[in-house]
Length: 86
Image (cartoon, rainbow, N blue to C red; front, side):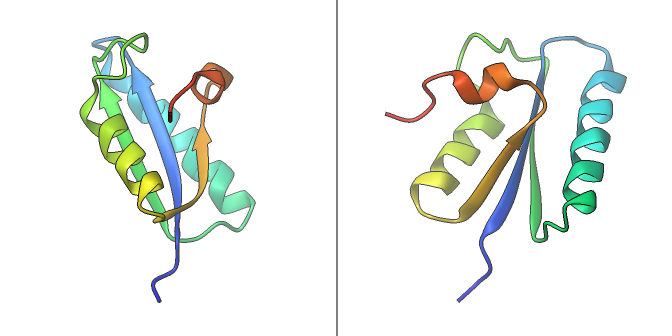
């Protein structure tokens, strides 16, 4: 059986390409420091965080629902507090 994923989710509404890369770098460093493996980054750049109609978020949600994801890591606590999955 394949090893389950550690999912990293990044989302910024800004057009500043550096912002999304900074989130990715921070979270990748975090996963490395904690020894997490099999990392997959899901990133939505230039999407409003108030809407769940985002391509990478939809893919992440699907991967969680089918059991591919072991852990979910996001930079901002608000992403994990929202009611993401019904």
